[in-house]
Length: 199
Ligand code: ATP
Image (cartoon, rainbow, N blue to C red; front, side, top):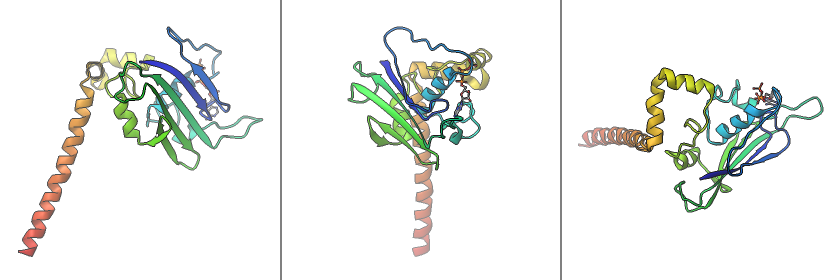
């Protein structure tokens, strides 16, 4: 699976739309301090569903929307799209080209899209489970993360191996199933109470 394209508009320092094409091999982004290199990485994290403002180096989610400059007014919408070549079918979908999009409006409304069809955040996280790509997976490695892995903070080393070996999706599904079981048990208890009252 190959990351092919990143489109950013109205996100952090990118008031105008920018498109980055990822060709085969290594892509390096260079530029002076403060020009927005880390913002590109933040945009990738964000479109993959990152919910933590701390991880996005922002106080509030709204602050990721382009805030304007002396000569430009702030944007009302932040939009990021990330495209993948899925000809090897690594992502569990029939599409050979996959584009995910996340939008956030200043009024707080937000939207996720998969190949331009509205979807839930869960559809995006499920799609990337155990592929190594995801807001909290090992596809984006920062210096801080290397420290955490070396010091095994919050079991991070184990989590990394679980994601790489493909166990994470089963753990997520187990948690979802246990939650459903819990809900069903309380529904059952409620039905029994009602039956008792009727009798
Ligand atoms: P360094 O090399 O120092 O790490 P960098 O190239 O990684 O820098 P970033 O941290 O990506 O730079 O970008 C910082 C810039 O992004 C700052 O100038 C900041 O003002 C700008 N910025 C962040 N959020 C917004 C926003 N919402 N609107 C406009 N500009 C923003």
